[in-house]
Length: 105
Image 1 (tube, rainbow, N blue to C red):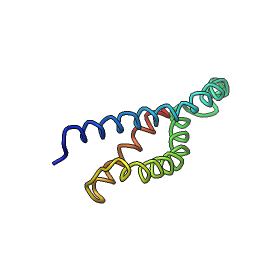
Image 2: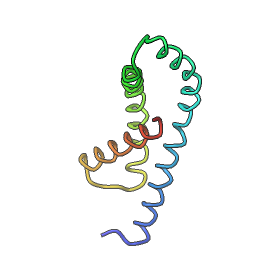
Image 3: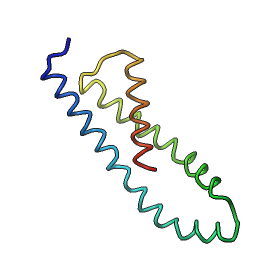
Image 4: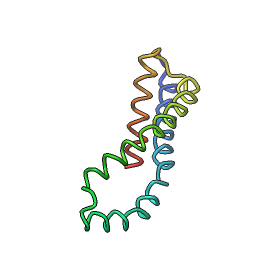
């Protein structure tokens, strides 16, 4: 059983780490603004569809997000004092991947 003070500290650390992960992904916003003009021009000339652009951008960003999430989780999972073995780490890793992906998109 975790004492209430320990649980509150872990939840606070998780909240700060999730918000930090979203803020680290804001660099993608600048890249999207730079690519927007090219995207509008090429879709106007029917060079490719919008769905193709979204799928390719998603597939390109996945490896970087996995590396970023894995390094983040390897550092913070045991430092915070979370437990649960491999299944707990896997859940934490998937939640971090989702957070980083939401920060990018």
